[in-house]
Amino acid sequence: MVEIKHRNFAVNNIRIHIAEAGVGPTVLMIHGFPESWYSWRNQLQALAEQGYHAVAMDVRGYGRSSKPSQVEDYRMLKIVADVVAVAGALDNGKVILVGHDWGAPIAWNSALLRPDIFSGVAGLSVPFSPGGGLHQPTKAFAQMPGNEFYMAYFQQVGRAEKELEADIKQWLLGFYWCAGGDINNGPDVSTLGDGGTLKEKFMFPDEMPSWLTHHDLEIYSQEFEYSGFYGPLNRYRNLDRDWHDLSVFAGQPITIPAMFIGGERDGPTIWGAAAIDKFSTSLPKLFKSEILPGAGHWIQQERADRTNELLLEFFATL
Image: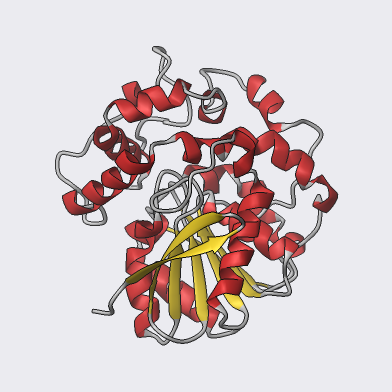
């Protein structure tokens, strides 16, 4: 087993925590919601063993990284600035980026805005979309039919926190399980139940899946017992700011080599079908786009071996 080490960087007047393993070209991995550096535990080991310096960061607001107090401190441009600063602090030449869930848009936008410092970018779950659009996101949510969309639910400070923080371990287990690929035709947790919460729609496993042990769930729970959900949820509360901030780049392709990995049963991958169809123009240096059969949202955990194979294939071309 390769040793995983931890350290902090002082960047952009905050602290960013990283976990790292191995020596070689740097791969910087960015997690999504609701996760942490730990969601890359299988990649840290595998990439380090294959001669890479594997690094997983805690995004601001999560785990051992700083938790700024203002909602606007979590806008995309600030998080991209964190990624750029961490890449510079690692001081190991050009960096390869990998992102999952919210980490994918962070990685995509980092590559879009600073192609000079990144040699390649891989997005998991959420495909790259060049942005733009006539309507700001929160107005689009308000026009969606049916029960309230989860991203709309997350907009009001304190509202979702009350639900998520009442029983963190149980909420995480239900959310992880329902968004995973083990349930075929499971509950739609992208909208609220009739009672106005997400958790009322949750199902729970009879036994833990192989990709999420009791030990794994305990580590995730401890991270959020420490950090809470205010910072993580603020990522959603900046969607309109991001729409304005990045409008000047609307329609622009990513010019460095790229790869996409999605799950056959993953909501964001399914919703992003139109964006995937446009990869020939939005990702002109696309190496590969692969949808993993039976996989749900937690791709690098549910299908760790195949994810590692694909990443290593991509990295070998850079």
